[in-house]
Length: 198
Image 1 (cartoon, rainbow, N blue to C red):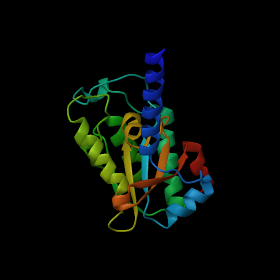
Image 2 (image 1 turned 180 degrees about the horizontal axis):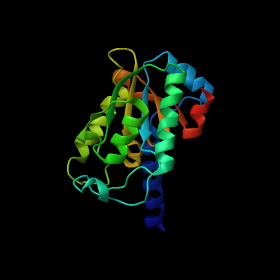
Image 3 (image 1 turned 60 degrees about the horizontal axis):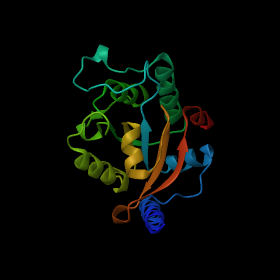
Image 4 (image 1 turned 90 degrees about the vertical axis):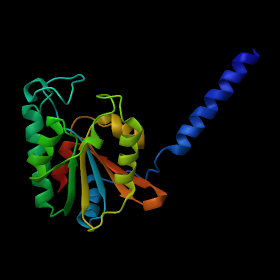
């Protein structure tokens, strides 16, 4: 009985600690509200790569043809997102992506350029360097953009789930407000079709 009570108390403490560490979430904004905010710049937009040809864990050192690649749907959604950004005149600053082909390709298709960053490798793909990758993402989500435009990150579900407690489907994006030393706030989540609101 005492052991059960202790276990219950420990579980409650663990949950309370996890909740206290989770990123603050603003009221979920509508797609139109998010797009209007992005026009003003200064946000961070974290995309999980768009839809792929298969599901599972691959390796970044595999040849391109063996990696999970964007499917036709993923290519179309990447174009859809890029067109929406241009249509809405959303200012884009840094564009960084994981070295996996599906992430680089999405960034290139949507935004026409990309800086490949090993720090954005998925947490499931390689055990080495987890703390450094987590620290890098925390910094990118919290640091205000130096030029006032929006920072784009294209990476994997595991990274953002670890740092912000958000689970993204393929092609989804979470929009964050960087607060410097205070961390970041979550403005909302956009699915690929939501960008049509532009």
